[in-house]
Length: 325
Image (cartoon, rainbow, N blue to C red):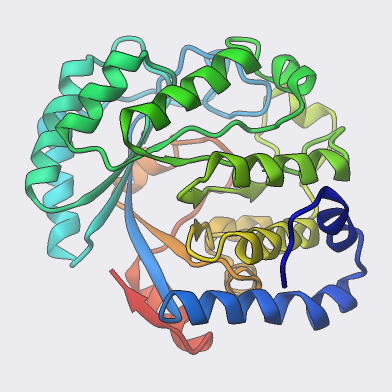
């Protein structure tokens, strides 16, 4: 199935659930299996700082949220947690933080170098830097930089992300690509006020950017954020449709499979939500390396719950897939 136009994407986004599940979902799953050994991929996930200077209207870690306890994990402890991940057999690690103005860049380079020496494939999400810093991160061992554009609608981006702007974000994304790192990027699906045409534009932008990983999830309201007052969770079926369209358009990329289900209390480890994402063509799960007390304060969304490797193996078995660490 060759999808190249906005009209084709819109046709799928507007499909009824039963037609989508009959015609599109199985095709996307087939494309993934044929191009990727039918394997679930797993990455260690480590939120090393939940301090953020930004005031994004949708994020629970926004600077204005006083309801969470802030923390920073120093470089040597990050390295120790990386060793724990290696002992579990994990070969990929996703390092993520808020845009923490007091976390020294040299500290990041220190733990990146150490984790690179352990043989990790390293993904890093630490916000907007400059071109020279991206090049330093590449030289230190970062394989993939994660910078979501969140929404391709410039006016909406500027409204929801008042600490930066769309042009600055897209310039940063271009500089990431110029540095030689792979680019992981994507959108928020179903935030209040978003139109189907916006989602189609988002998908086309992901294709244009030639992303390596689509870290997408539906909009999940975070308590105490301004956007939570405007509306509830994004539509789960629309999110699944986007996953399938992305898989059909980009067979080899990673797509987040840690997706919510109907019961939001199950977080990103909802069995039904995870299995539906796999059926739709997603493939990537996380193992959270944070201690429970810190994990609850890495609070981008409410009920972020992520289970460990046993959960991933259970899902792979249910989906008749392999696990690739």
